[in-house]
Image 1 (cartoon, each protein chain N blue to C red):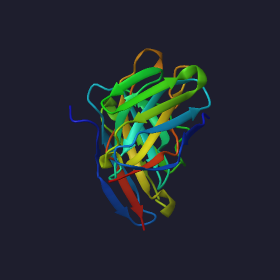
Image 2: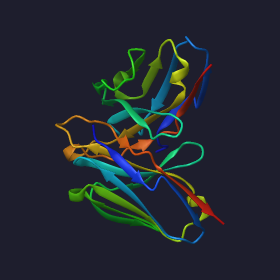
Image 3: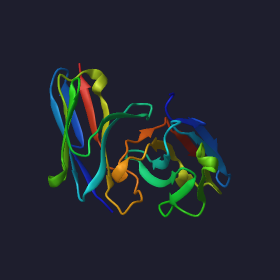
Length: 112
Length: 116
């Protein structure tokens, strides 16, 4: 199946800092999503971005599908940004669905 | 639109018992997915439905796991003869299928299962 690698696995930053999270994947994809998982386990949708660039407030994301990677940028970090960030992809298939394959996540801690 | 809902949110059971979880997807969505998440890992895909048809079930973890989606609305995931290794968060997601197989998935809050 498709492989998804996220880096870094852990990241500790001071409030106000900027960060870049990376997601590499091993095959062509139909879907790519970035999630933030809160302490209660809820997966919060950040971006649906199989290709291109999107921005939402302090967050932005870029996917270069031809080079099989995606980047999530967080600017001016706040303590509420802390948590686990997942990249998830769905491989292109012949009409069915493979479901999303998740990376292991980046555990982000923002210190005041 | 109230999002994807799951019930119960927590379930504690004894080894060997059967458990059933329910998922109500976003109403206009035609695809429904089940995932399992263990501690420290990302969610793992189990199965999915398109309307009422279960189109992929080879990824269910064993024959003790089964899922249904009668009438293409809510879905249930059943685990028979639970084992301690089944302890995990069970997540449901739904999406609206677009051209080319695309569609953003939205997740419910999950059901946390503890098997004693």
